[in-house]
Structure formats: structure tokens, C-alpha cells
Image 1 (tube, rainbow, N blue to C red):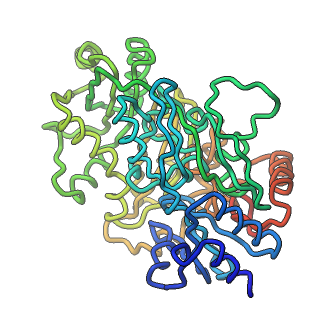
Image 2 (image 1 turned 30 degrees about the vertical axis):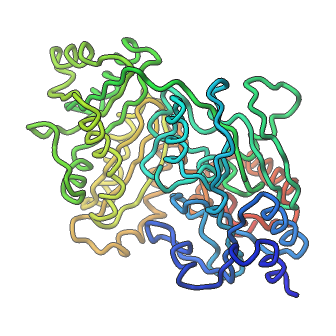
Length: 462
């Protein structure tokens, strides 16, 4: 009986497939940047089944690729191109184990979609605050493994701040049960932190306890036109002064991005009558009229609309959340998920845009993102009608150009998407040697056989 046969037996007939048509969607990164191969896709339904798979893999040296909703943006969840990695899909581990309204916690398995977490919390008048464009498809295990951020980091923090406890299967097959719902636990190392943001390289997250919050009783959503990116940073400072921690989101949108959305996404419309170079979409747990009125009066804003209903607020958010899909439909796009100090965001956008256009004058910089945490999605769109593969062949050169500026300004080359395969070379270039050495020691301690998500974070198969 081969190792693969033993793995099939461990998950039962419903837990595996070799059908190429079923497997095919799991082999391609959603933008088409990377395509892998696998001899077998396993879909365990329980933590014990995951344990059995990893124990067999560790003993035999069989490499495993871990995948959630396959919405990641660094090619980490797709199996290797050599066809030697078994694909471990967590989609069947989709149970919500408990929701505790009194303790404001929710315990769920790794394959539960983020949108399902929202619904489960809302049924008990609670809120799970992580919000991102892919929330209908991305899964709890994936957003933990990438330490996802989204649009509400400003008030609630990223996944690292939202996780209270984890259940993890180690590469050896051992099950670590850290599913504690404690807000304070100072008994030695906080082991769950090793797995948050580790991109599946240290263990497979199978369940988690996450924090819930009271839903916002008052929510005001505004879309504001601005003359410059600098005006957006100025308005953000004013908003923080006025609203404090009641400001939940503050999103920067350039005109280019809005035009792509209006062009490619059906039923969207421009909420304002005249175009402006920049916009912010902001949301707060209190009225925004005083802030916006003052900005219009002193010229920091040129126009604005405040949603008068939930439907209008949803329509405004759709403009922001559709940017990535619209860029995909527009043509080739080279993406950068970076962060700089909030006060440097406008300067970074200006400097990076100028540098890109100096080398690639036909390119179209489309910088958007989360002003509250300094996260800029500095995407570069090809010229209209340009050959997509030819444009994306410049990916590595544009990465180095943009990332040099990011690092020079005290920023990070990965704000929320992670490293995966896509940025492993860049990580090795920019992180100090001791940082990388320490990370490799941690990897070796958890995964001595180097079977789990090999080649992610670290270059090649190191």
C-alpha cells in the first residue's frame, strides 16, 4: 500500500480525488500568475484526518501544499509545478463549533468562509470585524495564516489582534490544542503567534477562537473627492482628532481606479457629478457631516456624498471592493502590497509613481489602500490594449524599483498579503541575514522534514 493510498484511506472515499476536472481550479492562482500540479487532492473533514495525513507525510517525506479558499495573492496556496506536492484542501472543515455572545467569542474550523463568520455572529447580535473584498470565498484558516488585514484594521486590528486561540496540526501529525478563549494568558511563550502569518509553513490551522464585538449601532459612510493624496492624509488626521477610535475605515481611491470599476463592473455608477484626482471612502460610528462640511469649506475636499441608507453605503463600498477585479479585466497589472508610515503615504505615492513612469512611461500607476494603517496597494496597470504577458515580464524589475523606495522610506514590502512564492526573492534581498536565519531555525524546529508548504517565504526549496 503506497503512502498516497494510506492517505486516501485516512480521509475516506469522500475526502480525496484524482479527477483532473475537480482539481483544476485548485491548481491556478486566481490571477493566473502561477499554475501547479498535484497527484492527489485531499479534503479532510476532521482534525484527526489532517493529523493522519501529516504524520504519513512526515514519515515518508511527502510534500504537502495547504489551501483554503485559494484567494491568496502570493501564490502560496497552489501546489508546486513539479507535481510532487499533495494538495491538502481545508474546504470540508467548515463547521462553526460555538458562538458565545456573553464572552464575545466564536470558535470555527479553518474552512469556514469569512462571510459565514459575519452571519453567525450577526445572528446573536455580535460582529466579527474582519472585512475584505474576498470575504465570500476566503476562509478562516487562510486569513489567519496570512495575518490578513482588510478595511477595518484601523479600529479592530489585523487577524493577529482578533485571534484568541488556535488548534493546529504540526507537520509531524501532533495536534496542538490551544483553543482557549482567554483575553489574558501570560504562561510562557504565546505559541499561537508562531502560526499567525506563517503561511502554512509551520503547521496547519484547523480551528480558531476569534474575538467578536458589539455591532455598530450608528454607522455613517461618506465618499469624498479630494484635490491630492496629501489632502487625504490631512483629512485622515482631522477625522482621527474628531472621531477617535469611532473611525472604522478610511480608504484611498484614485480616479484611475474608479474609472476601471465604472468601466468593467456592471451597475456601478459615479457617486459624484464631477471627476476628481483622488477620493476617500470613510466610515465611522458617528455622523461624518461636521468633518466633511469643514473639509469642503476650507478646500481640503471638493465634493462629497454621505450614504442615506444601507443600500447606498453598500454601493459606495462596492466601488472600493471591486478595484482588483476591475484591474484584472482592464489588462495586465503588476501589484505591490506595501506599507509606509501614514505620514509618508502621499510622498511615497508621488515618488514611486514618478520612478515607474520614468522607466515605463506608458504604465498607469493605480495606488489605493488603507490610509489608517499606511498600507498602499501600489498597482501598476499596463497601457490600454498592451500585451499582458509582455507587460508582466517586467514584474521583477518593477518590484525592485518600488521596493527600494519602500525600504528607503522605512516601510515593508508586504503589508498584508504575505510572502508566499511571489516575494520570496525580495524577502531574501531586503530582510537582514539574522532575521532570515532565525526564521529558518523556527521552520526547522516545527518541520524538521521540511514537508509543509516548502518554497513559501524562503527562496526555492531552502
